[in-house]
Length: 396
Image (cartoon, rainbow, N blue to C red; front, side):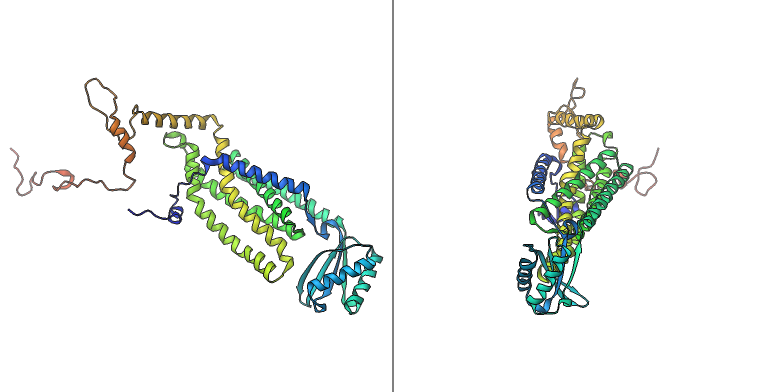
């Protein structure tokens, strides 16, 4: 029988990928990435927008020239009247009244902002009323940040209560650990790339929380289904049952992530990259990275961490030992697997036929038909004639 491809086996949940068995590798990779992210926070930090750091914003009509030309002239006006302040970010923005360039600078006083606006009008050769400006205090950004952190704490608390009621506390702990790792890694990538932190960034971080939670719940639901009543038999350890659940739900999680990443990727690469919609890049990057990392952490981190904690449970630990001990006894020929014939000899009692024990692992799959032919006689293997049927033997 020809071997099927990996994609087909993934769809049927038969890929048999050893994800849980390699949990030390996944934990090590996650630890290194988290360390890199923390170092990026400490060394490079975040590039805060004027909503968080405070500053001024000037809007210039796009008809004055290209974005680079406009930025150079604004820097010249700032050098003359702004006390050495430079443009922090420059982007092209569209609105109902037309397209314009938005130039964001560091904090300027009211007199400096008016002088810079007049100087910019002279540089561009337009009227000063065609240039609009605004000032944002850093207090507004700190207020948004505190509310976002409060929302994050409330979300995590509600998620923990839900997961404890829906599953158990170990699954809740594993899910929250995966969620926090997702946030740290996403923030680390955002810090390394150097994108500006705006209110859109905060919205994106809060958005990926729900997606990450959904992916973890899907996997844990299958783990719970596979491990329900697992201690009643000695066929599979808790880690093996959880790994089977991962293989069975892997393609579903992958499809969900791909479908979610396609529109977000279009938002980031086409909207912000090709079309130049600068206001979309902050939201697009955090959503794209967060959703991709959420898929990886839900598969490679959440379930292996759950197995690690469950193996500390005395009941699960004893069950795992029984399973491994039984397999060792079968391999040594001391115990007969289910369905394996025993050797029949005088005085051998429970002696096991080693060859039969070795062949017991090759039992047919569920639903497979027996290899032997059925008796050619009547139903149940009875002889063709009998009873009062014609041709049958008469009773005496």
